[in-house]
Image 1 (tube, rainbow, N blue to C red):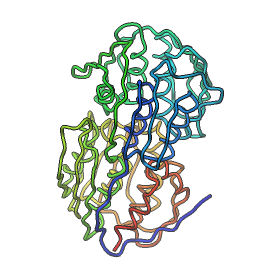
Image 2 (image 1 turned 180 degrees about the vertical axis):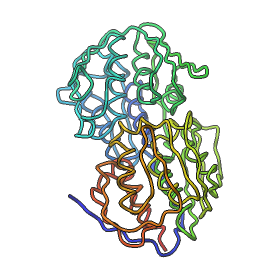
Image 3 (image 1 turned 90 degrees about the horizontal axis):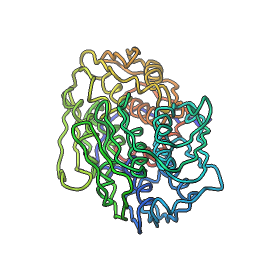
Image 4 (image 1 turned 90 degrees about the vertical axis):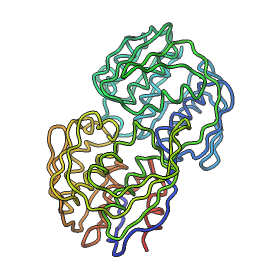
Length: 429
């Protein structure tokens, strides 16, 4: 087991960081480039472990993909260009890869088998596999297709009219990708608005998709055409430095090229509610994915309630919001976040367990947490539990601790932010 020692920060954090490419958009750029006709070039691609798993899977499906650091070139031949793989499709730790790939494979007239790591083996897949089965895909696996390994035999799909029981961009995207291959028009009704990168990318690749409030309509039989993609910085990665800049005394950080898609900016809204000193500059609202620069300074924070429709728009940021709340005045309550239980770890229990080790006053609830502010954090030994976002949250927490922190399994962070520690150290003066 790898362990690293993290020292408290005596002085503030100051500097400029270029946030690495958005993980969700990087995944989708590979997928859409692979099912489109022509050559797609992607710049500022995130070469993290999860996105490399997506590349690996599509290569096994017969797609030629060239890599040059954070630039990739995809030679797509449409849906029909995908070939039956002669090897297992290993998604590694990536929930996005497996769930969206299921939507694509559901309509392909061949057999494929998907596996992942130990964490993926515990994540529920029936939320995707059951609606895909109603469309005509044959999918099986452990517990009737609830867990990996999964076997998919795709083919001719019927359209679906589906009211989603959970707010999930992964489930929605899988059904949209299946709907593109169905014989007719599919309708997907969201429980709450979730990230809309798939819808934006369909339009970017020349396809059509309609959205009326939370009702999405997509026609089958569409052809997609190659398009060059520049991936903005990942706001979920930026969130760790937004919180660091707000809670470490005498700090001022500028984050460049951060994606500001409105379905992803819940973290900024919550931080504003709590009184954070955030400013957005160079806000490009007109590109296919909005982006801008963000300045964050040390802030005087107050507790708040995080609940309802904002939750799907910041679900990945809740661990770092919990840390932020430990330094606010008063109590913060997070509700409606039971989806955290089926992430890379049960993030409700894991956040509470690990921050408690460092001296935070925090308790788990059935669908969230209650965090009491004003905590004075101490040192200790903590673990990422193999979850990249838990690992980064604990690394930021260590900046405030009175003694050093030993972090177990820091390598999990490379899933989404390979240069995280390099960027963090560059801010320490």
